[in-house]
Amino acid sequence: MGSGKTALVAALCRSLAGDLALAVVTNDIYTTEDADFLRQAGVLAGERIVAVETGCCPHTAIRDDIGANLEAVEGLEERLAPLDLVLVESGGDNLTATFSRGLVDRQIFVLDVAGGDKVPRKGGPGVTGADLLVVNKVDLAPAVRADLAVMARDAAARRGGGPVVFCSLTDDPAAGAVTSWVRAQLAVPPG
Amino acid sequence: MSLRAAALLLADGRFPAGGHAHSGGVEAAVARGRVGDLDDLVAFLRGRLATAGLVDAALAATTCHRAGGAGVLPWGELVAEADARQPSPALRASARVQGRALLRVGRRAWPGPILDELACAGPDGTPHSVVLGACAAAAGLRPGDAAAIAAHQAVAGPASAAVRLLGFDPLAVAAALADLADDVDRVAADAARTAGGSAADLPCGSALLLELGAEDHAAWEVRLFAS
Image 1 (cartoon, each protein chain N blue to C red):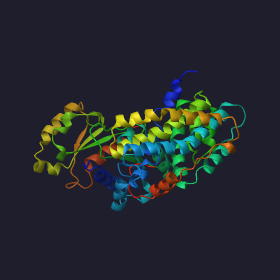
Image 2 (cartoon, helix red, strand yellow; image 1 turned 180 degrees about the vertical axis):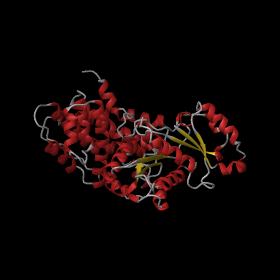
Image 3 (cartoon, rainbow over the protein chains, first blue to last red; image 1 turned 90 degrees about the horizontal axis):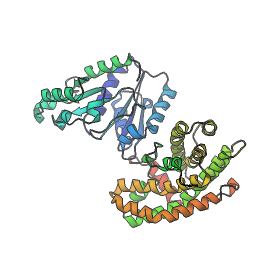
């Protein structure tokens, strides 16, 4: 919650929309908060952003019971074909949140430095299993006394060396490192 | 015949058919102060079971009966009868959303001509009760099973939504559902008896507050459940 996922999605849209056909599906606790934020940010045409209603449980809608999200993605693909990339955001949950492979080809898990530098060590399927771990808001590290070296060491251990990006949208509003990772993934076949 | 595993699967709240995102009218009732404590919830569930629950169970049973028989399946007639019993546009839409979600997983679970035909028959979606009956038939279940599953879901889903919305003791809610079990069985049996007859003669149990509440709820800017 509050780790900056929606702001990161907005940054990715700004960085990628110039040459890729994009769409976004949001999963909120309350219906359309994140979708409204993205529409107001003006990063994509409103028709390219769809909100899924999750009945209090965004993690259920992305993991155990993905039909509503599949329907949203398929609807976007039908209306806006051809699409290069659909970003599915689910938010406001916890370390056990993880996406079904029936719904997404790649998963990015976003942690907030202000949540404490112990979080990577605590692990959980998001930290250990995501294709990319983003440690966000690193500009706040001094203020919250978070040790980024500890986070990097623990994340590497938990993830078996899987990729980790340290990100600050304050210092780099285009989220360059995350954008590069996403672009590289587009060249890799899904699965 | 004894309890069938396919029926348990279809009735399970964890079967991935999208039910978790719908409150069955509880969210609107809570907001309007009609459900605040456990007694209110039980009264709400009794009312829902006797009205929407009976209609859904009868439609599910009739669909299962027709789909399990020979001949061209009268999907259009069944959908028209479902819509004739549902005056709320919001609830018609919600029934179709839930029907599409159930059909998506049903076709994977029980592939075959029944559900393929249904998918072609209703491109905009078919009401959940009709899809449920068709899934039951595709799974080799009987009309009575379809009715029992529909009647169970008419109270179980809203009860779980109430736990999330009001923080009720889940054990107390489970006990309340156990108390309702005989009523659920009775409604399922009444519904199953209609299965062989004319679809036009199916029961009609309008629930005005559910319908008005659903119209109101669909217009909210902020809500936790889709319906």
